[in-house]
Length: 323
Image (cartoon, rainbow, N blue to C red; front, top):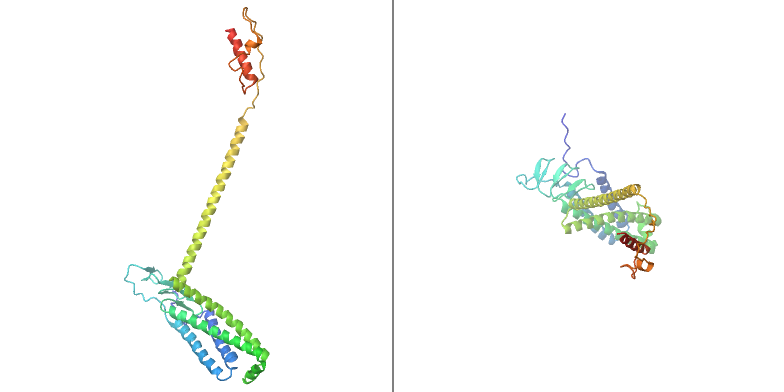
């Protein structure tokens, strides 16, 4: 029975949807609802009109850019199949350009592959990368705008509480008092700061990649290569250290065995006691006096051998007398 090949996904709207994609839609809706109810509706005329116009434009920009990024199919068109240079995809069984990589979640080759975005449930490549960055920019503008408006409304609620209560009372279907409204503002502020931190960090990262001429894929590929090189260098240093330790231990064992062998074969030195020679009878006509016997080439000079040189000289003299 032949194995079923995985389905190639054309865009991010094709099922199955990723949980992050559903979460991104919820965040988008919460931004719209929070901005309209907590920030726009309490404003008096003509401030509410100005807010809703700007807010609608930014929200529409976020939605359009995100939708285009999701709908566009970033797959490679396989126009370079006649070229000998480039990559060969063993999954698609076609020759692709050098910037093309195969995306496993979407099961397709993506031209200028950057990364697979779980928030939009699609691959990011040459065909939709600009729309992806535009989504980040517009979402950052929206989060900053909401942050500024929330701060303004919090300040008004504390500096002009009577005015804020009057504005809230004009919204008949809310029935919000001042304290619950403040709590809702602080919750919305924390939510907005969390989204702004994540999106702004991602936007700065992609701006840096653009300046460096890298993609997300090549960036992390280089990081993996550096980490692998560091691990190999650490492993090499550790192996060199271990080999040195082994050699030192072997050298110590060899020296110790030699010392043990040498001490086992050694014969203790015995200092021979001086042997006294029997007195030799003096020849007639030869008078040997102590002063004459002590006269030697070494007499009058200091000898480090001390008494041994003197006894050696005396023995030579006596032997000469024997001859």
